Structures are given as structure tokens and as C-alpha cells.
Length: 404
Image (cartoon, rainbow, N blue to C red):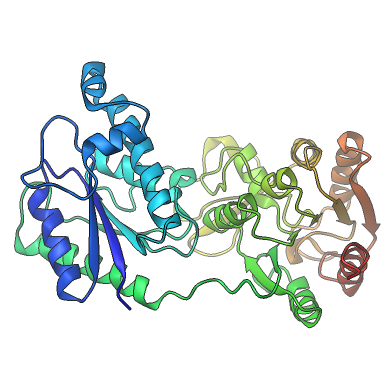
């Protein structure tokens, strides 16, 4: 239970706040390491990792960074060094979690540092811009925790102490409570929306668990897809069942509900076997609480709840989405299969449902096949993605690939 938390910040200007965090962690029985990422001035007392160490890890030195005369570029160099050193410290077993404090400059660096650590490692950012639209979704680590640094931009006070102490206790508590990922069973990564929209996982998950696999189902609403892709990039999956690829279209059409440009690429680039189906490919999610952009004038929409609404794509849009799917699948180095459910790809587009488009699946399938490499297995069913026949096809492919 003796966990060590890395504390990162500019100790030249925020020494009191960072040392307060350190004291809280010590009072709760934790250990700490400190990392200074300041540039211009020196901290009042030495840190475990100095700014000179950070600059060197960023392939530079403090004098050269100062000579740049550009605080934006300078902090990016320090962010690179801090990220490399943090990843190394975790890899060496020196730390069990990280907490980073900052305004916009420190938060910019903090996002990179948190992305350098794998999912499951406690990451906490105390920021003056927590949850702000200034933070791009593709730079936010999938499992990062964040709290607003309220009233604490300069110096300690009772308000900011409340935030800092919560953050210190949270990251230490997370480090104590977290359970390491069980690697005794091969892991399968699956994407799906909830059972109101997609039901295949109700059949597939227990069937795959009976075969001896661990199955993790990811909710692809931006951050869920990011987590899925992060693990795929790390090679954590024995196989990928990517059956809700809507984030590909979200990113293509500029939605803020994006998992990034690398969505649906990392498993293939790693050679991880993947079975893919176009769940909700005909929809683009947008924030349900925000006014709909003029970009979508003339489009139908579907309000899922107060958080999420979906724009219904036209047949021409489906062609673009299909071509993008093909581009991503064609770069795969491992076994890849595509299962096309001609009866629809979510509950709202079934025959008789409000978003049913009788021509849509055929248009998408034709466009996809026209660009798809011959190395990608093609499987087609007249059934719906939530029909039993879809699960039967998937399990047949899986069993053929993983006979042993």
C-alpha cells in the first residue's frame, strides 16, 4: 500500500501549492517524487527531477530553450521531456500515479504527460481550465481525472486548498485501490453502443468468455473510442471486434464527438486480427445541448437524450464514410474481415423504425467494396446487425482464426 505519486509542475512559481499537495499525500501515508518543469527561474528547494533533467529528456537544455524566446515552443520541449521521464518512471516501477498542476501552460503540458501513461495508471490534473472547451478531445487521456483549480492561480487560500487536497487524496486513493489488469486470459476489444441500439454483445460476450477470453466492450462516443484505440496501439488485444464505427464518420464530418484521426487503424497497423462491422455508420453524433450547426441544414436528426443527438447522413455521405472505412482497413497487416448486415446497423434503422433507409446499406456496401483490398475478407448477411445470424457469422470467423 506504499504508493508513490509523481508531482509535476512549475516549482519556481507554484512551489507553495505543489508542496501543499506533497504534504497532503504524505499525511495520507503516500510517498512522492517531484518534477520541476519551469524554465526561467529556479525553485526554492531542489526537486527529485530538475528542470535541467526535463530539458535534456526533451533533447535540449534550459539555455537553449530560453534562447528560443517563445514560451509556447519552450513548454512543448518541456512537455516532451516530462512525458518521456514520466513514462520511464512508470516503466521502472518508480511511480504509481501522477498529479499535475497548472494554468493553461501547465495544462497543455499535463495533457501530454497523461497521454504518455497507459490506461489504468492514476492520472490527475488540477487545472484552471478543467473541463473547458479549450481542451481538444484527442489530447485527453481516456482515463484522466480532472478538477478545477478554483481561486488558486496565485498563492494558497482556503478555497484552492480544498481543491488541491481533494486531488491529492484522489490520486493516492486511486493508486491504492487500482487493480492491475489481469493478463491470464487473452483480451478481446469490442465496440458497441447500449442495448437500446445494439444487442449483439449480449450473445457474443458470454460466447467468447466460454471460449476462454476476457471481453471488454467500449462505448464509442469519443473518449470510449480513444481508450479502445490506445489499447489497440499498445497491442493489448488478441482480437478486435469493432462493430460500432460511427466515430469514423464523426471525425470525417468534424464532430466534436471524435476519437481522433487514428480511429479504426491501430489494431490493423499492429497486425491484430480484426472483425469489423459498420454499426451506426449512417449517423454523426453532436452535442445535444448545443444549437445544430448550419452545416446540417436540411438533414434529419434524432435526439438520443439531452447530451447526444445524431445527424442522419445522406446516401452521398454514406459513400464518403464507406471510402474512409476502406482506407483504414486497407492498411491492416493482420487478418481482417468485414461483416456487412444489409438489414441495418442499429435499432433505429430497422424496417419500420424511424430512420430506416431501404437503399442506404446497399449504397454503403457497394462503395466500400469498390475501394476495399482483396486481403479483407467480405461477409454479407441480409439480416440486421442485432439478428442472431450476425453473431453466428462473427463466431464462425473467430473460431476459424483461433482454432487453438
